[in-house]
Length: 190
Image (cartoon, rainbow, N blue to C red; front, side, top):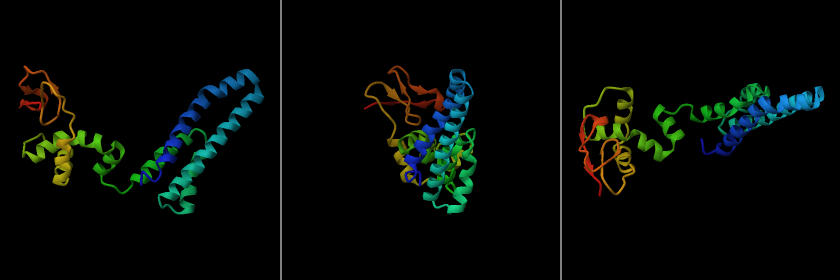
């Protein structure tokens, strides 16, 4: 669902930044330079940008399967310039709605970054290693074994020195233990 609205959400994000900069910089400059006429024109332009963002948000919400009336009602607050920058956030939240919490993290991180992030917990789960109890441990342990195995393969490993098999941190040759992972023995790099 995120792929379906990727272009619109990126556009909304850029327009949101531009709108904030417009409000913070352009409106005061237009007022200083052109007086009341500059102020009115700059405010009207801010509302035009907000209307474009509200339209884009309504369109993206429709693409995500929301009914026409519901998508319009959800986009109406974005007609106001101070709430319009939230349009991208609402679109992404709608795209991720109903997904498991780890699936949301994976969608936002991307596969490679997600697999690197879960690597320590995947190592603990695959090696039946006792780790401090946390909700992330339980969530990662519930993932399919194939995903956990891919997480252990995704770590960047350099060609020299040693590395920790759990967290994939690199160490100098004279180091023998990873102190961040409970004194786990380091492995030689291939």
